[in-house]
Structure formats: structure tokens, C-alpha cells
Amino acid sequence: MRSDFELDREQSLALGALALLLAFCGAAAVFALGSRSEAAGEAAQRRAILTQLEAAQGRSGARGGKAAIAPDAAFFAAPTQGQASALLQAHLTRLVVAQHASVTTSATQPTTREDTSDVVRLRATFDLGLAPLQTLLYELETGAPYVFVDALSISPRGGGRRGAEPPALRVTLDLRALWRRTQI
Image 1 (cartoon, rainbow, N blue to C red):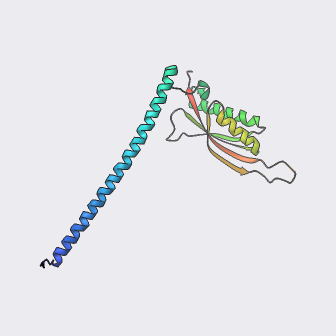
Image 2: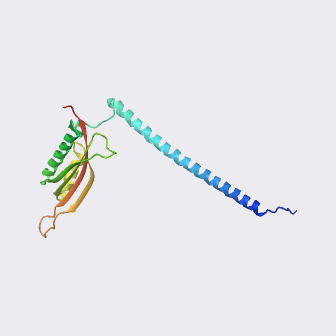
Image 3: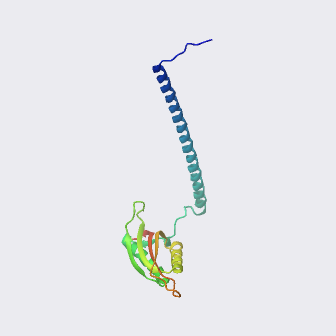
């Protein structure tokens, strides 16, 4: 059996355009289903994390009736942000002096957009050896009040002579700490 099915040029172009349109729609549908699947997976992960957090909240609530918060010693207590910055500067100076060094420069830094209103920032520069620097950083980040090192810049200071002490390092720290407003 022979069919007399011949297409002219316009019909061929229209049929090709229709096939292209169907392929594009099919690809769009596959992409949409894949995106929906990824979003559903992410939502399921977030629900699982939320469930874990709620369970942990319930356990801490059963112990003391409220969620765990930082102790008062974790904060610099001051009536103003400027005084809290001064307390942070004094705290850092005490730690640096304990390492037999002194702070060369220090300046309060402005808060960033991501900061909350209870954050103070400080940039300090001093000269210190490697071992005392390690001790200082450990004391800063594990002690109270809580101080966070946001940036650390180290450069060699002076040339070391053979047989002499190791050269000191020029250290610049960007610190962030939390403060709690007190009444005047």
C-alpha cells in the first residue's frame, strides 16, 4: 500500500517548529520537576533540623525551664558601646602584657550590617613571638568574656640574627565581642 503523503515546504517548517516546541516544553517540564524535587529535598532537610532543634529545646526546657544562654561573664557589661569598646581594649591589653609585649596601636572599628546592636569591634596591632601568640589566641577565644577573632594578619618584624631570639611577628587582630547594656 502506498501513501501519497507529501509535505510542501511550509508544512515541513510548521511540523519542524511544532516538534521543536514540543521538545522545548518537555525540557522545561523536566527542569521544573527537577527543581521541585530539589526544593522538596531541601525542605525535608530543614524540617529534620528544625525537629532536632525543637527536641533539644524540649530537653533543655525539661532541665531548667528555659533554653541555655550565655553566662553574664560572657559579655562586657557597660552602659554605652564606647565604654564596652574600652573594656575590650583593656582586656586585650591585659592578655598581651601577660605575654610580655605591649599593644602598639588599637582602634575601635565600626559595626557591620550583619552585626547586632550588642557587638563591639576592635583592631589592635602588637609585636609578639609565635609561641606567645598561640597562647594569646587560645586565651582570647576560650576565656570569658567571649571574644572572637574575625581577622588575623601576621608579618615578620625585623631580621633574625643567627643564634639570637626568633624574630618577633607584627600581629594585627580584628576582634569582635558582645556587650550587655547596664544601667548608669
